[in-house]
Image (cartoon, rainbow, N blue to C red; front, side, top):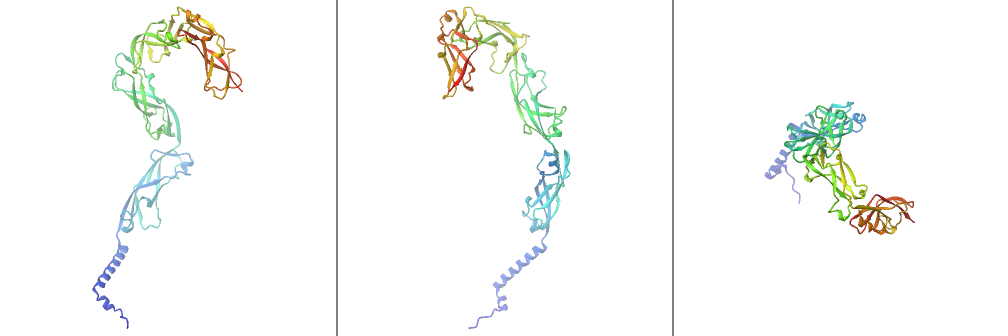
Length: 430
């Protein structure tokens, strides 16, 4: 049987074929027109980053760095066929913007020309314009300097404290007394002072702490460009203003190393002068009932040594305002006597050294032990009444004897005490 021949006439007389053929021809025609006669459009590409290459550049070899703004962007306008540049077909990654640094040979502001290229050099569009042709960049050498922070009170008040209170600017406590400034050398050379400004809005009655912003000054005006403080562009530090209350108070002393009988019933004494006009620190904890002018140590108190002098300048929580330079304290030692005892080797304990090491303690140069106390109590003491303790923590010992401080105390007596300083010779044994 002979096959049927394909007949174009019959094919084109087929309605379904004709419809499909027409659609195909129309599509091909549309593609050709779109490619050959597509409209030319312009497109803005925004926020394209600018590269400033510093490695091995002219400013880099001259020791110059960039200060201030370091991140730059530009907007780029391109022109091309819609199917090339339209919609989201292009982005910032399709461009490279480079700032030219070849002519930067000194510190200061420099206008850097921008060079713009396509990432794909064969891309079929043109760069029409950019939002910036140049960028302004500051170059300088890097420098660091340490400055003392100077507190400065900024207020319109006639008086910083309320009536009956006082305050001295030299007593201001800055939590960070010194800071390190770093940045552009040209600007650093202008700096003279770093201030911590303190704003007071009402007269003070108690000590106050303020968060103060540090300000850099060149002598007349603030310097802030291209300089950081301790690595920060801005820094606040706590600043304390100690406030004192003016009053007249009786003078007193405290005791330390007292035996049990005198802890709650201290020895009587006379302090001269008996009172003083003082400024008492108002920090919420200082007593304003008396002025403690010093501490009497029982290890220095004997029948023949019972008068002590304390400097007014050594008192930390008050200021003496009446001109008194020192205070004289005479401790009443009536009924107190002294005696001498010999410390026995068996009553000495050394502790704190390595457990696997043996130590040898010698008292050959220790001498007699001086004790003081009520006469009857001292008379009752024997050589076995005194004991010694030697703390060997953090002590390096060798086979050669080392002179080590020793604490000597009276045992089983609450009204006698040891006076003076004592030492033992300590060494390690094989």
